[in-house]
Image 1 (cartoon, rainbow, N blue to C red):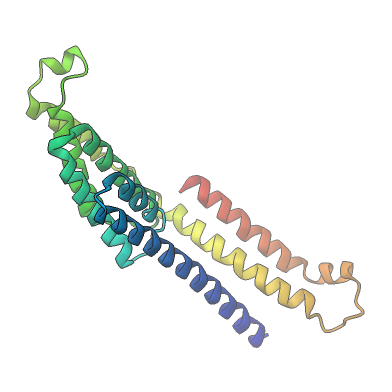
Image 2 (image 1 turned 90 degrees about the vertical axis):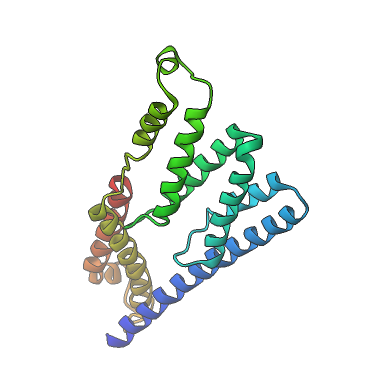
Length: 218
């Protein structure tokens, strides 16, 4: 039993390592492509690759951090020439960082900076309605910033349930495969094997259900 549990844990760690490596190198690839395009004075194509890099979030990833900084650099360059383009860049960066949230929100300082820049640019653009015409630029900036700072954080409880459910389901799958196909009595019919592992199957269904429920409610 201890050997089986050890093998299950090792398999789980191996899978997590593979996923982490995939995320790390995918982010690195997109960042390096972005730098290549930026060196060729093609900021738009560089931005496309940087946005793709932000899809591969891994805590403490140096290439993710560099991608965030490079996007901020491109946004600052666009502010004077094309404020609306800069506005779009800041919004997309903010959205990408919020999309990477789990039990915590990464890059809160960058999100705060994006909020301020978005509010500032919106206030500097021509008013979109009659009410805004009568407001000062400072007031419009404050109102925009107040809306942006209304953070809707994910539920820590449901995020924890989601994580526990996913890990439990993956662990169950590995454990079940090892138990089911290495059953001591090879002549034992499959129906009997299923019956003898029914509590294990029920556990797997529970973990899977917790994972889905956590995804829906997080």
